Amino acid sequence: MPKTLQLERISPDISAKEFFSSYVSKRRPVIVSGLLDDPSFQGPKWTDLDYLAKKAGDVEVMVEPIHPTANQYGTDAERMSVTFREFLGSLRKEEGPWPYLTTQYSDEDPDAETVFPPPTNALRDEFPVVPRIMGNLFLQQVNLWLGKSKDGSSSGLHHDFHDNIYCLLKGRKRFVLFPPKEVENLYPYGTLDTLHPNGLIAYEDIPVRPDGLSKRAAAKARVRALERKIDALKAKQKNGKGKGKGHSKDLKALMDAHDAALDELAELALDEDVAGEEEDDFDALMGGLDDFDDVDDAGQGSSGHLDSDDDEEGDGEWEEWKGIGHTDDEDEPSEHEDALEDDEDEGEESPLGEDTEQTTEPSSFSRIPTAHLHRYLGIPTTAALPPTFSASDFPRLKKTTDPYVVELTEGEMLYLPASWWHEVTSTSTGSPEDGTDVHMAFNYWFYPPDALESFDTPYRDTLVWEYLRDKAVAAEQESREAGKQTRKEKRVREDSSEGIAGSKKARR
Image 1 (spheres, helix red, strand yellow):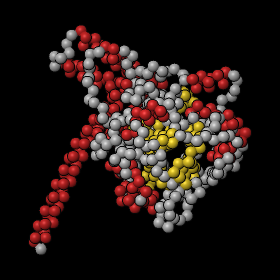
Image 2 (spheres, helix red, strand yellow):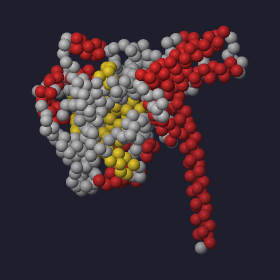
Image 3 (cartoon, rainbow, N blue to C red):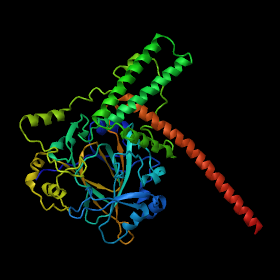
Image 4 (cartoon, rainbow, N blue to C red):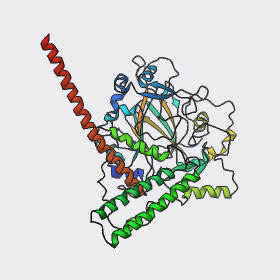
């Protein structure tokens, strides 16, 4: 039986810069002994299910049933669409099994990016867009996790593709954690493509860059960003502010970079056989940025990507465009990849993707049954072994480093860097009599930083990320104006209603 390790605990008032330098940049998970200290964070209110139903009850959500034989969530069990109010009502039943509210995605298009999926879209005025502690990371998605389990239910062993700040609002959560480098010993369903230097795992069917963007989405963003730079420089020249050899040289550099970006995009489209698709991952990413259009919580907690200054376009500096938009280490193998290749050279059979049978399980989930993992570690379990299970199918599990076992209680947070493997067992707390015996968490996912030496600019592809940040800034500014107009119209309607009611009362 392996030894289990304990994580460090820190105070929630740590500065964002210190949090980045001590944990984010070092890719170290840590427990935060408290919830977000942003003034706009109202998460504890949500533990009142009546309040939640009133606030967000009408939105449609997808809920997941527990697997009938494995007795765990995070499987290919078909999800159901219900109103959030109906789901909350189901949690008040005395006897299970109870459904589970997990990350929301479309079964028809599971890669579609939605920054504020239901029911968080109805709660958006009650949490910061980017918490203070997360500094300059760029938001990918938020989620509310809600379920009920008297004895503990498991998520299954898996990893995510984004940095995670996990806020436990109610209940207890036990996490089993392994670092990304254990990918070859944890038998993912997917076939490994790359283990990036920042720890992000990419699979052949999900070939993401170290910053979490697909190469195709990044290539499209690069094209759009260069077009914006070109338009700005041409506008300067038209206004007589950009004449001379220097600006001509800058324009030529931009045009050449734009041509190269278009060539790269065309090659990726051919390689990935996506030509002709109506919507690809770039369109989904842009649609996700459009989610900011409805943010009325103007600027609260938005230190990450909504407070950047307006870009000074076309500043005439030739050096800015050398090697534009590409990371230095994008195509370089990490030390972990080298280690994997060494294993293969030594003649060891790799377990990664060796089973070619068809499965609907995500690439990032482990084939190791939860019950076997728990028994191997000597920790309590409610999961069941599959009928055909054999421990001999998973010999490399014994080669893993000692895992962390984390007991998280309500009112605490866990920071988990991208691709850290985790199995989560959730247990309800509260009173069965009043229906409050649930477990609830709220989490943020952020694109994983790949410029780990820089708190201010944590993403190496500055051209692409400046473009995406500016899109988010523009969306929020548009939201502010729309929000002001909406509130003004609401006041007019209320004033009109009061006037009509007053005139009726006068007539009576």
